[in-house]
Image (cartoon, rainbow, N blue to C red; front, side, top):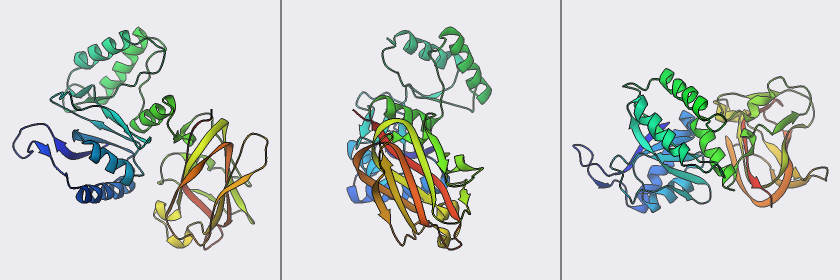
Length: 311
């Protein structure tokens, strides 16, 4: 998780109080650079120190397509700093405790939150610990086990990208369906590394040297309203752009019905294809590669398909 600092509520040397970037053009430039940083680092979540204005949050949502969510530290617990969802996509989560330093502190807070939970809907709680003091990784594991014993079946610790993906799923916002354990992957021919096409990182690579048309298919296990797809090609993995998928189609279908073409791309050289779609109901999505690249070997470093439960 990275750190960004567009706004500060602390009055301290070297960190003036107030909005750090308030000009819209400069803010958009800053968040475009942030998008490049996220892509190169592989980060999908950031922590913002110490708040973000509504305009700044919109800029992150518009310019940072790689961003799943952000947490706001809010050391001074300023009431105006709140959680929000921007563009029906990016959650900004106010941390319950920023830089928790002791086991007792974070455990007491979590236990209190769980005791007050009615259990009718998931409750999402974001904390930040100070690893320079007591809360080393082994203590975090101990905390999870401790709370699991006191509240059996009620507590699950998850990594940051899953946290925001699960939040969107629980609240009816589009989420990456390929992170769902219900989603099944298929491919043309045999492929021992099929899961690498949807493991959430372009650092790995799915390849297939089958002759003829090659395809990847994703079955979500239920019907969803699909609104966006992202394909990261060979170049996103650091390989030559000549190996990027040149010609492909994206198709969708409800269960047991005919395939409908949602999009077709010809002559692609880009490392990433990121497309907003007119929402369509589908249980399965297929990527058909008719020209996989310079040497006819299909290479996909990552796929994301965003949707929400169909009504």
